[in-house]
Image (cartoon, rainbow, N blue to C red):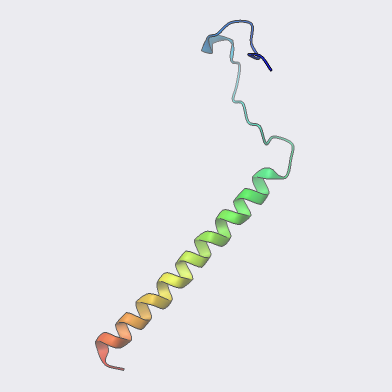
Amino acid sequence: MGFPYSEVSWSVVDGAMFIGWGSSLPAITTAISAVICLWVLVEGNRSEHKRFAKFEGK
């Protein structure tokens, strides 16, 4: 597996190189990231409600 261009310079790169192009990898990683973000938001909200209730004495 060698270098994919004829010379070692950025001048020969025409556009962006994205390994996941044409596959389902971007959708899968986006879905995983969205699930993680939602989980963090829900757990943070739950934690804040517990602390607020303790502070209010409810």
